[in-house]
Length: 97
Ligand code: SF4
Image 1 (spheres, helix red, strand yellow):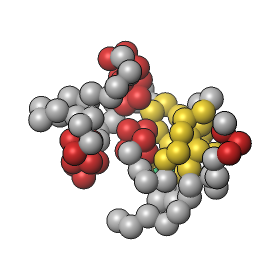
Image 2: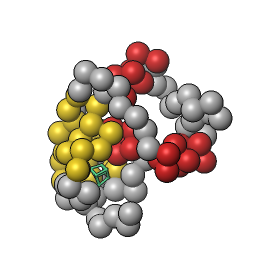
Image 3: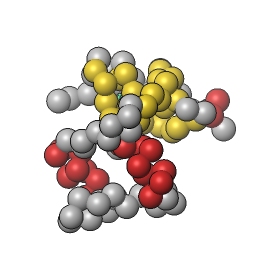
Image 4: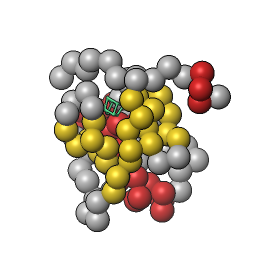
């Protein structure tokens, strides 16, 4: 149940036309988690290539980093709780750079 999750922010997911680059440190996290292969291809379980392409166009206006953040980066962020109805439920804790 969504109600049971404690979250500070509900951040709306927005989309841009162009695909966004995933920062290298995020790539490392994805690789460590088995979510990206050595060639840099994303492998998220249960996510179709079409959906992945869409995810790469998505971003959130992160309330913690005060910047636009690629959805994939947000997805692997320690504050990420879940994605509900076009929004990210975010714990809102301080993040170290
Ligand atoms: S989960 Fe992380 S990246 Fe996403 S909005 Fe929250 S702090 Fe920002």
